[in-house]
Length: 452
Image 1 (tube, helix red, strand yellow):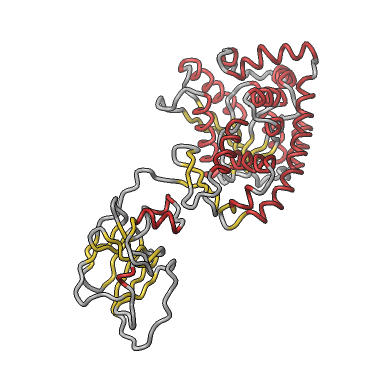
Image 2: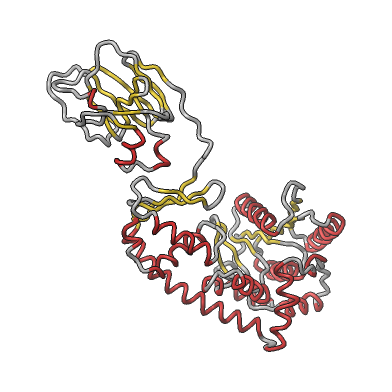
């Protein structure tokens, strides 16, 4: 086993004394075996090991004994150990525990500027993972199982025990007289993975004792095919992506199979739960709203939304409790701060007619009386505007729809108003009443605030 792990480290260029590794250490058979093997190798290579034990605090008395066992082992081997005990406020669910572990792994990976995070998954874990994902309807992606090297939030994860079974691990612990923790919850079949391990996989082994090897090989084939698909999708992305969004019309022109694969990858990349039902939901939402001028949003999580309009598809982080900016009285020339931007109004003193900006620019040449009382704010219910070049007025909401202003942007647009009439919707439209028939009297401008 030591030689196999050493070869794994060589494969990823990790055998160097200047390296630092954070090691997930529950003290169970898998993680104690892994830490022991890594410790033996480090005695010759001298890389730094930092064991991280997370006490989930689900079984207080038993958890304290397990923590003490981890402390005793690390003390006997002179291995650095960090212990984190989860607060009672953390929900006692597999999902909450997983999210908290990821948070702590990232914290200490960053703190120690680590070169890798080691986790003790085995090919037996891979079998459970593949079967669990298939039961949830995750499709071919689920067949890829657990990767021996992966990444999340710039944390490089390595799993050096992926070629070993649970039986191999237990044999190593026995031969080397290790005393791992034996978590009693591992036998509670109310947890999905335990049910698979004790009820389903044990039955499958009656059909084929080498089921772990069979599924591991299947995962490698699936990973290889996923890599081929990824190369193909990367070529497509060059054509359908612009800046940080996807061009809607080019996206819906793709086949349904390619769209679904793109959606699945999007969910995975954003660490969102995925299954065939979720992929189909997003596919239908995108295609239903692919011709919407103003666009529609679909909730993905509490703060993450998917936006779809005729022009673009993108993700949004929205604050639904967004507050309106404080109204600002404008009765003279000057500079004013509004919504994190700088609004200025000044007299136009030149004698030549300027080159008038386009209506989507944050600048306008206008005609105003010598005395004026205006208001700078964001939109209110009942706002109206007489669009530039038109005779009558219309509701501001209708103007936004006609101009294709995306819904999530409407509350951020700065308006120069007189009562409920909008005289300038910055970057969208100028009111006909402010038209400069000859020389303008004033210049309106909005710029980003300089925080330097």
